[in-house]
Length: 512
Figure (cartoon, helix red, strand yellow):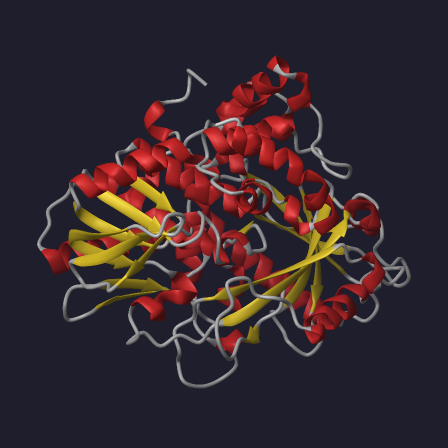
């Protein structure tokens, strides 16, 4: 642990000390509300510009939408299909920053294959190929070299089967191959951003709720003790995502739900590419089967209107589960059934209300809104573009408040654990740990070496070890068992695995 910069360590003890310091001097330059990928991005952007920053999150880092994505670092191909060239280019530029500079350890190139089956019309195949070529042009425009993301191409039926062994063989005449970025874990990305912000001086406070929010103040309540303090700030940014309207009721959002199903990898026979299945009757929309760490495959996703009160943890509808199974089965030799599903998850997109149309058609462009009292709200956007969203929000807060700060540097600022991609294979730790912890992987491995009980998997059906849970508590700010099981790891995605690992999570928290 000695090799980890103390400023980047988040823990229960650090939280207690930071709360005491904030109560002793309840004033900051910038107060950030929301600990998702955008909120932590705002904290990092502002702190790296030299501002005194505090971030408060009612639950945990990555608690909301940030942990429920498809774990893709999109290059904007979907937006080209709808003519949104600006958003597509922005996505490609931000993808380049993430996979080559900001977090090479948490990202990797992912091949995505569209099998050309008998029911795929040649016209549609040709249009898809043209779309992939446009994606290649986006990659070139973003200056992403082919060594980082290869160009798209037509592939043979044998190559399709090698990547997706359970694909339907009858009528298979080859496939179209495209490359995009994939995250090891979106919640881990959020934690990495928060720790990097802390390294630059930001105060990161989870399980702390904000109320009575204005453009220059908020009441902060410790959810664990009930104690409150009023914090004064020169600027306040609302980055509460889908819950932004609870902070500023003037914000009008139209949330949409995106659902995924969780399968074991053996169900797909060793899937090594994203199996991409066109949604019948909806050109440009696909269902993906995406290979994941820890022997899982996610199948998603949907885009459904989410009416009514906002739940802390959204749940898929029966219709969404049926839709995903029916669509992915179009490309499989043996249909999947509900018995094959070992877990599900759903997230809510914080889309601005455009007043009409289906949520699938609502723009994914982010918006930065400044209220009359100076409160800045940032909503919309995509996980891939979090950094640009944060930059724009901080710029708006500086403009509204009159604060002065240095220029934005996050485009070239690596996160904790990051290293150039060609250096990652030389880190002395198992590849699985390197993909989750980067340069800090040897420290996690050393925890297991020092205590054999921590080296073993915490439950059947997972490779996650006790050492990873201890690291989550001592360094990554996990305060509760759910923080460890649901966000520092993704053990909770398969409920029986999480139940078996609960004792190990409790022991890891007790070790602090």
